[in-house]
Length: 566
Image (cartoon, helix red, strand yellow):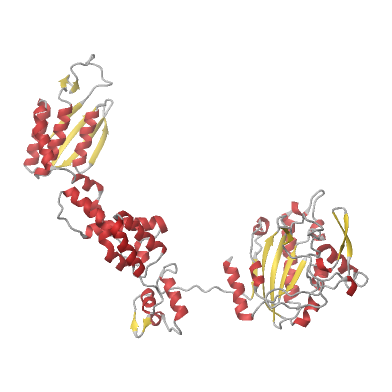
């Protein structure tokens, strides 16, 4: 819609204000419509007919004005089609003439008076049928034009003997009272006869009204305010037939500004537009980026050099103040909001100046995780903070950091700082050693055998330990499997077994480091301490508790079978 208004303003800049503003409304009683209706139908029942007929009438009216030159040679024109609540279309038309209409010529083109039936009965019938407003006000308070007890169209108008042009708006047309030669007639409103005079006449063109027998409001344009009426809603039938909603002549072509080798949607277009508005006579894309003899790499830098952009002092002060009483998470959110809504001139410099306060929580987490308070900020930590900021920018504006003039974070490097690695590092060697010393003596014979073989392999620096664990509805076995996965490389192959359970093949990378050995030991001794009462029975390596009432029952039986350990 805004584009059509801009098109109209293009005409205004080139040719001045319009000469005539015409509102052409479909007449449902046109014989071209009524002759095609079926018995019992009205025009509102056949939008296809009204659309086709009005389209032809509109084309005829435009041609009548612009090609027949009935008001003089036409320079340009445009229209917009709208629809009333009852579904009838009407068009707002703006016309520019080569020779502007002079004030003394208005009365020869536009009339706001009732015709004399003795001299032109046809025009009298058309005007009294189509061009009378209301009446409203005290004569008809239920009229649709009434609001707060007043007519929104400012009817009835005042009587005046001469047309007076208004500097900013529509002119005051001649409306003579009956004593000065004005006409009147009787109209029945709600079973009441009302005397209608020239105060209720909508301005019209006698020539257009007689030619098209419709409501055709014609106004002399004293300003460009009428342009706001050229755009509004659509209608299904009009769209189905492919009729244009807006049309103009001559054509207005919208010229898109493209940066060299850059998508027009890039934010640099904004800075290029600033330069085009403020730099006089640039010769090339390179020339417009030159300020005081210095060539700048981007349009944004050129705008900064010219002082067209505000500096970032307010954002510097804001972030410095936030660092005193806000958490790093809150500062990152504040920075993301500034990036996406305030567009700071040098976002990268803002980040460099305040990145420590935005990364403080990440540093704290690393110090706690590694039990080392001497750890300082690193590029990996800054990268993790940038990823968090970019995620916020994507949520707020669906744009990455690169769109705001900042370096993009390294998403691949962030994998080194992932949750799994952080969890792996969250342990205390002292606590682990205490657990081992307390729980190893509680293992049963087979658990101790498994433990010893694993610890021997770890101590020997064996590259991999391959283990196969079979589980039958045993929560402890499930926990055991998951714990092995937690400290391994996470590779699991699951097979269907011949009984109600599953088989997990665990490939665990063993490390010779004492910390990892303690971690293995802790997992195994915890499992052994929880289940020291397991007993081995049967050829299928089934385990059952000694107090089980039915050793052959399988549905609820605890079952761990170590098939292979190498």
